Amino acid sequence: MTSEQTDVLLAVDIQNDFCTGGALAVPDGDAVVPVANRLLERFDNAVITQDWHPPDHHSFASQHSGKEPFDSTDMPYGEQTLWPDHCVQGTDGAGFHPHLLTKRAQLIVRKGFRSHIDSYSAFFENDQKTPTGLTGYLRERGLTRLTLLGLAYDVCVQFSALDARRLGFEVTLVRSGCRAIDMNGSADAATRAMTEAGVNFIDDLI
Image 1 (cartoon, rainbow, N blue to C red):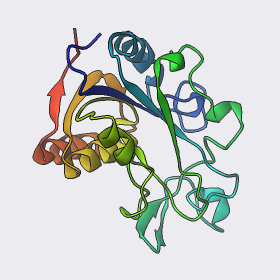
Image 2 (image 1 turned 90 degrees about the horizontal axis):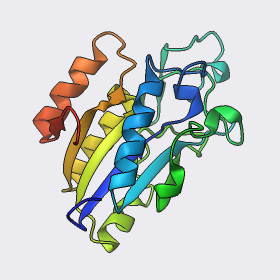
Image 3 (image 1 turned 180 degrees about the vertical axis):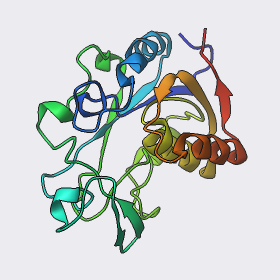
Image 4 (image 1 turned 45 degrees about the horizontal axis):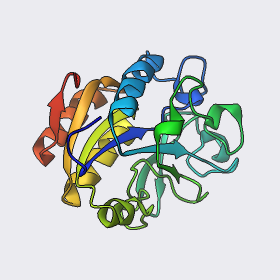
């Protein structure tokens, strides 16, 4: 239980496809589950996000002739990394890790369901304009201090933290509750970007 009713836990994309054996497995991704569960039990307020892609999502390399996963392409909203097909709506891969205590969350935010645009952040699509609705939810409930964890540290966790700071929320990131893909130094770059944005880092929340 937290001491402040302005606190909320935001658990990002702890889904089968980002865990061991998944289509876009994050190294050691399963290790975030016990950390997330411990904090879900302690927080009165919790939100979890869920990648929820249609089968023809434009961020999938399979939708681009001659492209391979982790190549990039230009989209109307900027450069887009192309991913293996993952978190396809209604599949087991899109489901939450079976041990995640989802019953503790008051809200599930689904993102990435528009086929023409990817969505890393819990707050906006990748055009940085189209909202998910999470901002309004948090503000209407008076939730101003976010504790953040999930997958992947250098993609959806990072974008969520940066947007939260841009929107004026206080953000604390729990390192033990995150794992990174870490392509070409992306984990270190994410740490620098979040530090510059004013994100607070803690190893764990005891």
